[in-house]
Image (cartoon, rainbow, N blue to C red):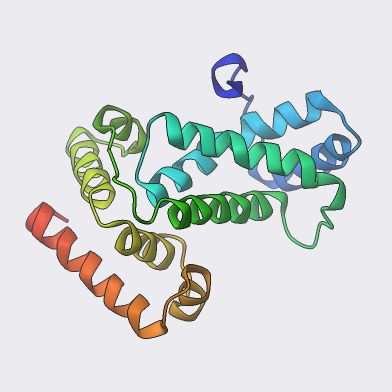
Length: 193
């Protein structure tokens, strides 16, 4: 897998990342594998985190979906128009990949990987770290559609109309699923949030 074989990226100043991403994307679109590897190293952790939050599985399947995002990105880069930042485009690609996974697995059982969930939360202090792990586990334990609505609405900032269209449900169902997810979270982790 790419994640385990590539060295970690060197830190760049935040203002140069977007310009550098655009340059790397243009080079990668011309089949420059080294440029694509740099983009991968720079963005894979954030995209993996989005997938884990949406799909609820931090194990091998989330890694597979992350790899799938980058395969799709490699294939689509020649048609990328630079209307938005590359990071925005990659993020949307990750969300769409996770949502497709949710649609295909709608009626299949879900198994969680608690050990991998520990790696998702990285708060500053020990107590915050525990709270982060508890919250990640609680979110991961939600029913798939409720989890997807919660993550898309509360984490990704989508509107109910967008969620409803993407998940194939009524706007009222999106609102009801969000209410359900929040209630289940409160019950599972209590007043510690």
